[in-house]
Length: 380
Image (cartoon, rainbow, N blue to C red; front, side):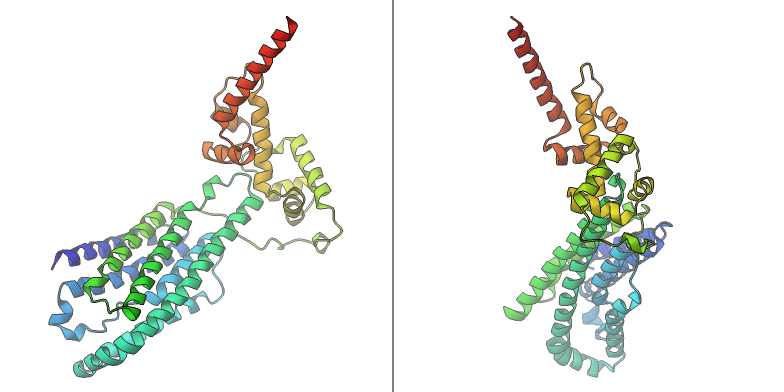
């Protein structure tokens, strides 16, 4: 077994190991099992090249069409994983895996053919007809699934912003990284396929970079999935669920005035100080529906619930920082005014003030000293 075969074998083994670890994670069981299945399929795809670089297909031609390539299931499984993390799986979700099942049946049928018939079909109809068409179909479908992954995670982010004042624990940067890594692999595979069809054929060795990209993808998906597999995320639900008919949007509603009234009440009551504040809880206290409150803030104030609450907190921290004798560190101030973490405080402060908390404090202290000096000079 050569060096290339050993390196790719290590990638396959690690993919399988991570699949086992992720599949055994008790939280998010459905999502984790989907990701584990994806890693198993990647490992099987890598095994084709492990066998190839080891010379197994040359010594045993009967291994041709060994049903290890189920790449039609890669993108659907990734999308189903994103859906399972961010909400619920669609009805008849298993139908998205039928192309991979068809791919398996085709390879198995070819694998069971007599040796001479198998080789003749492989070198003629398969290589020059079935494989290019199947690759094009898989890549085109994968593009659609990647776009769906990005759309669904972005929709979930907006849903979180609309309903939670403290959403730092559920920030899905890692999930976007997984989708981006898959998209890069898709570009690499598409580039190699286009070169093979339009420029000149790529031999078995020439496809090695794509296989190493598969190994890297397995590490990215496996490690990120394992690290975050135990985090439980809020279930995304239909925002209209459970609302009365009277809560339906009215074109005559003055959402700006409604938002101003809601905001004034929230600030006056000091609810923004509460860690873990949710849209539902605030709507209940205001005597309105989640939908009405969310629309008032978005359409009337131009801010999500998350941004509105954090803007109140930032203004309160700013007011505290310019108080005479205020010497507490920034984290203590942030926690005292409702922020759950330093990361959420820094992000919200920059969005509101356009600068970091420490820089804002330095600037305003300097301005305060300058104002005091000017006042003293005027007295003289």
